[in-house]
Length: 563
Image (cartoon, rainbow, N blue to C red; front, side, top):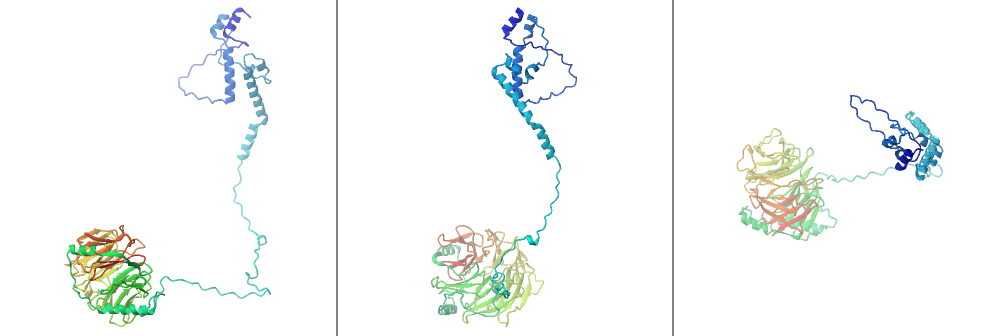
């Protein structure tokens, strides 16, 4: 080795064989630019081997200037010839090489041994074979289920008792099927008169007779002051403020939801009647204890939607249901049948003349009927169509009793009973403004100069009927929540018989209350009691001469406000 070469090796610390590097010129670039492709990154083991080889080559290749100075023959090229180091199968070249450390030589040897081991497993051939098997198209045909043979089914063992076979082998006769018991929610009552017998099991005949006698006795006494008065609003509000609800003035009278109520006009004793949706009528004598003063009768099979004590003879209680109109005569202890309709269901009624022998009856199909109680039988004198989908309530004018107002599905009209005929009836007055179904419409009690209506569009409307014309618009409108829903009886705003320009209606507000409005739409008073009134009183009735208000809820309970 020459001195220059030894000097160069000593300065650069180069040890190893001579490496030849050849520099090859690159071709001229094309005119069209191209996007360089990103080379695929080699595996981790290959990257490690390349790093070791590159480090070794960096130490083995002398700089060009040093080689030129020492006179070495160096050809520069971009490829490093490492075949002699990497192609030795037994690794003897690596072990004898002084350029690599012991760790690097052992690592390269392990890499080669692992490569030989994986090559002996032939994983690539196995993977190719599995892919070929998986790529074969398989048949997707529907397999038919073979029917089971009769002999293959397991035979269930049954005793001779279940097979209805006598031990001797003689078949037993078949037992008749038990009759199906159908419980009718509304058992139909027979037509004709029904005895006035209470439905309660704990009610004795003696107490019932005493109750009926007291009812007949108070009906004979006429009120001292029969003239209707109109008080000023201030005095009327003071009287309302004195009416309270006590614990003993709340009791359950009927079983189900109350649909109608009536109050006896007596001033000596307070007697309240309530009809529910199952056909029961409960009478409560407030002069007795709640557990002793309630008597329940069942004169109907369907909801009792309308009920009045006769103004001419309060010993008669007239009640109406879908199928029949009955009169409870307390003197004879019987519920007489006044009118029966097999064609259409009835909705309400009212008395036409002062003698109350003639009635006007509304039907759910939109017709009305005129019934005379003096005529034998249970048929109507006249049936007239009002050209309406339904007639929910009918109410007669208190002064001009030939007029009556009918609340239909979405219309309220006033008719003259004298000009009614079977078909083609036209109203003399239309109360306009209703957009949904109307629950009720009633004349004011003294003069009949006003009509209050309750509509499902959440409004109470007051009309001036002192001068009837073809169409009337409301003079007052009260925003009121009338969305009672399915489980509550619909609200019906009724006039106070003692006050011409004030009406009462139930409320959904909390605390639960009963509201009193003036005809102008002003709220005058709210009856409520947090302790004893916790439900909605949909149906209300007021005493004609006393300061008594009764509200009925959907559980058959009555609440009596009095002074």
